[in-house]
Amino acid sequence: MNKPLPQPLIDPKQISRVAHLARLNPDEAERVLLRQELERILRSFDRLEWPDTRNTEPIYHPHPDTNRLRPDEVQSPFDPADLIHESIGQDGFLMAPKTME
View (tube, rainbow, N blue to C red):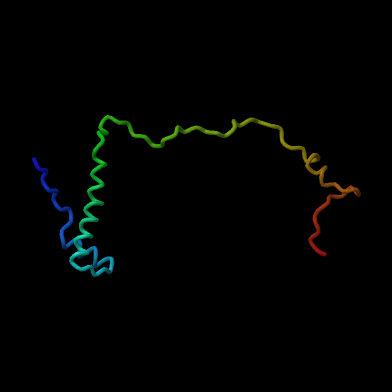
């Protein structure tokens, strides 16, 4: 038994409209090719109806949500004297880069 031919998804008026919007002026042979290509693209969306998803729970992300940050722990603050110690010069003053020559 032969399979029935699929019904066309796009009529010639739609091809003319798309060609006009794309600023194309295809001849009749090109219109046939355009129609075939556009129908092939539209028929590829039929594959989305194949799987039975009625009993499938939605998934929002393929990986589980896990927080990879370290836990918050209370620590003592830095001692300003320890931070300044590295910047004190021989004279006891704070050293800073020159800003003027």
